Length: 215
Image (cartoon, rainbow, N blue to C red; front, side, top):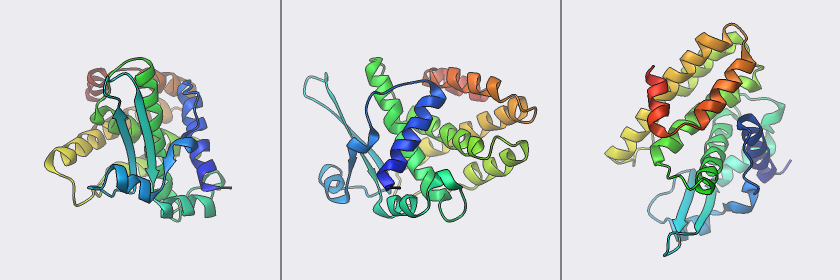
C-alpha cells in the first residue's frame, strides 16, 4: 500500500465516521519538504496544514505536509493491519493532519470561521475515537489509550507560549471528553450511542465544544 493511500484511507474513515463529504482527496493536497519550506520556512513540524486566502478572501488554498519518514512508516506498516509501537505515533500524525484538512474544508464550505484551537481539539478527539474503534471499542482498551494519548504529552520545543497554551487546552479538554465517552458509552458497550454523540460534537462550534468537555 502506498503511503498516500494510507492518508486517503484515514480520510475516508473520518468522513464516514462523521458523515461528511469533502468531495476531494487529501492525497491531491500533500506537498513535499521543498514545497513546505517555500511556503512556511520558519517552522519544520512533522505535520503541518498550510492555509491561505486570496486577496479578496473569497478563495481558500490548502496544502498538507506529512514528514517523509511518517509516510515511509505508513507504507511499510499498514495501520489497517494493526497498530503497535512501530507505527502508532506516525499513525497519530496522519490522523491529526487529515483531521485538520477535513475540518477546514467542511468549515470553509459552511462559510464558518475556525480557530486553531478548534482544529487541535477536534484532532485530539479524532485520535482517541479512531484508535478506540481500531481496537473494536473494547472497554478495557479505552483507559490505557487515554493515558497514552493525553497524559504527559511531549510538545515541540520551539513552540511559543500561545502555541503551547493552545495544545495544552486541546489536550486537557480532549482527555476530559474521552473520559466521559468512556464512562458513558464505552464501558457499557453503547457504541452506536457514542457515535451519535461524537457526530453532534463534531458539528458544534468551539465554545459549545469546550462547554461540553467541561460539563
